[in-house]
Length: 409
Image (cartoon, rainbow, N blue to C red; front, side):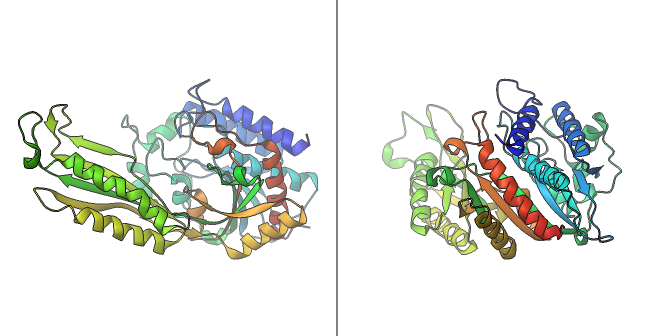
């Protein structure tokens, strides 16, 4: 086992101990006690690796290798270090650790970059405590205003600002970062799906992060007694909703190109065992790497829902969320592929089916992203696991790419 691989394992294992649910996965909510312990560890390692550490008013952590050019924009490399409840040890931290190890290689090889290199550990990507997700990156680029940030509260009514103060963070530090200070952003992440493992390929070069739409469909019928209402007199909202939902998977299959569709939440009213349901509300989550595929499927869902407006049934569709697909930067995609070839590491192109901080930065700077395989495609659970050998390969590719982007000598 080489040094990089060994250190990756040590860092990930240590970070996994900062959890509110020992033996039941990683639960590290933003601004919690576990979050504070992880911060202190990351800052200590950054300093050991010779990085200059600073934080912003959201609690994002930066470790910097200064560049030779005065006031030059930085190449950022990192990910997030919060988790979902009872999640895994790799989603997020693997990318932060990769950033640390790239910086370690810069130091070991005594490289002098022209442009600064900054390792970044971002807060609240998952949105598990304050909702919305991608908070650290959105805040950094100015998509989350000071006021909106201050108004965010957790399920116990504790605000972001209160929570930060409870663990001793300084809320008055600068929050928004000028995008002119960022030259590019690199992120490593576990795939969270089965494709790389099935292809037996250690690296995925991400071409795009899929667009995401969430629709809410409401079906209204008529309640009635389960025993006394004849079958031909019913306007059963659940039977109708079931008929709609059963047609949805085929829409994604027909659309192809990796399009997926999911109904994950369903509310039935009045929800009595002996009452005909009069209202059903369900979600439809649609994702694809190309916007036209997302749009096509939205139209088809709306058409299907509309056809049921008859016989005492009324329907409506509301768009709760619409996020456009984000293409990664073509030059950085080429650079990552070129460095993979140079190191003789097999790779394939891949789309990301989940959202990442990289999608936020992609509107403000040049972004590139690598995936490594996830065992059995599992993520957001204690069984989440990626091989440190694959992570080490990714670190070496990112190191070579960062050398080029920082113009290191």
